[in-house]
Image 1 (tube, rainbow, N blue to C red):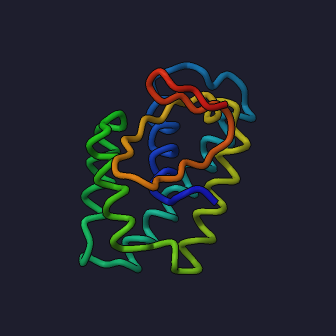
Image 2: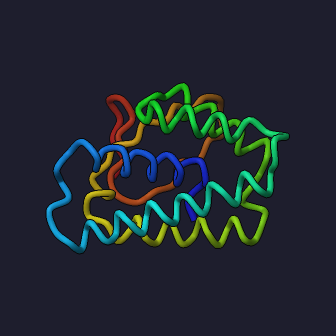
Length: 139
């Protein structure tokens, strides 16, 4: 499973881009989009329910939803997820797995570009497909 912060970022980007970019032409992609929207909503609601108001996850996600391209909001979400560790809850993890599966079914979602700033040392980046980091490409 990819990290919840990355999953949320991809879902937000997918849902926001599909509103403005007419890449969704066929009924199958529209059905996937609808399922992604529902699964994302359920994941978000469950995280907010489990974590309560003790974390900054809810306002951070709301800021990211309003500005999906903001690397600052993406970095803040990563920080807040590390603090709260919502993926340790079995229901949250199951909903995250469901959302990840749906996103993998979408050709439009696989074409998204997500930028995340990674700082510090001993970082591990895991993913599928091509990874471009500045002038360095891993693929």
